Length: 111
Image 1 (cartoon, one colour):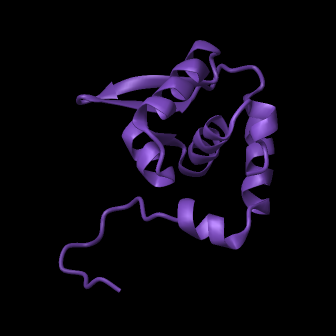
Image 2 (tube, helix red, strand yellow; image 1 turned 60 degrees about the horizontal axis):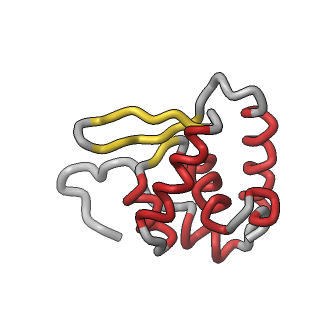
């Protein structure tokens, strides 16, 4: 993708782009989106949490990750990620970053 050189590897870039696009996520969901192993995603999220970039909380038995609002460079990081998301080819945007996140109304037919 576009920023893997800055973040160290492509998995780190994908995790951050996912969080920028969806605001929060959990390791299995992120791994499934990009067809990565869960351990790769967990390692990146743990690294980002150690550095203070993201924060996690338990929702039931699931550990959810979201941006840490106290991170000093958060506005700059998010601005860079937002710009990268806009510059991705349309095919990648459709494939990874346009998934439905809200539940469908009961009884509504599938397209």
